[in-house]
Amino acid sequence: MKKIVLAAMVLLIVSCQEQQKIGYVDNVKMMEDYQEKKDFDGKYEVINAAFSKKKDSISQVFQIEMQAFQVKAQKMRESKAQEEYAGIQQRAQQMGQLLQQEEQGLMSTAQVELDSMVSMVKKEIKAYGVANKYNYILGGGDGGSVLYGTDANDLTAEIVKTLNDKYTKE
Image (cartoon, rainbow, N blue to C red):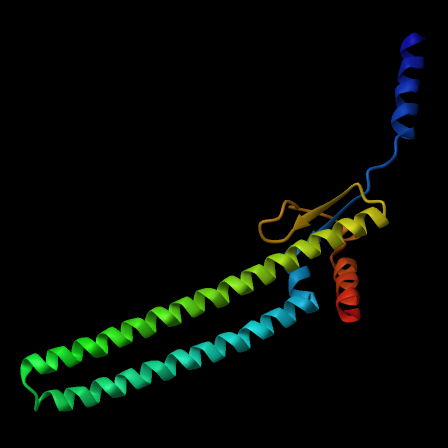
């Protein structure tokens, strides 16, 4: 009799406990569908294309200069040709270093901007979880921690809508 009463009390306590509300977000899909991320990608695609064009133009200038030098070098003394060639190489190396610094600066700026965006997205997901009384919102997609989840627990579309609505208001 005591065992039955004890079992009934345990069942009552377990059934009275609040259900854990858990959802997940497919991080990859969310970032693919998030308008600010799409705008970011478009912006940096244009910047990278312009930078590539600049690098190609500079490279062409040095190629033309080298071709002109090769023709001119045939009529020069060897020591003078070596001296001029060294000067061209030095300018090319300096330009390469400047381009590399510029590219690193662009990449650094993009990474800071992306990190800021990811941080803001995490805050929005947390706010969504608090507002909708979720105990946990897990990250899924590539490298995520959700290996399986029912569609009913997939919050990706709702989170993306919230993010996009907030982004378009800004």
